[in-house]
Amino acid sequence: MIKVNKIEHVGVAVRNCSAASSFYQLLGLKVDCTEEVGDSLKVAMLGVGDSQIEMLEPTNPDGTVAKFLEKRGEGIHHLALCVENLDGAVKELLAAGVRMIDQAPRPGSNGSMVAFVHPSATNGVLVELVDS
Image 1 (cartoon, rainbow, N blue to C red):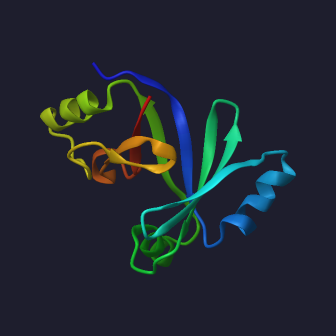
Image 2: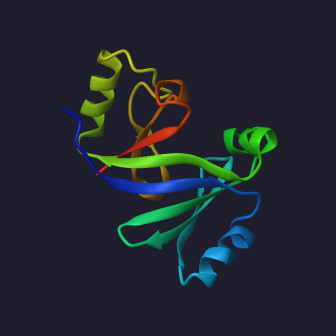
């Protein structure tokens, strides 16, 4: 059985991390870290208790976040859930016939391993599973 420990983060697609995070800084949140992920994404993480808000800024016009912004505009991109035994969770979901974007865990931001569940399997929500 898959065990979800917490909401790890909410991913928000933005055109500019600095500009978008300024509102959250008015609420007293701080940018914990920024990093380049792959060749198409800049990420800024803002801590909120045990969870985070992940700002996703495209750095390549052909990347998935750039395409998301082009089609839908800025806003919530995905929900990330922290799970125990990510590899086992992916295998269990695949065995249950759940449509996955990733067939196996892959490197994500901040040194984590992740796997995405296709929105068609989750009532339209892109779900990221993050190894705890």
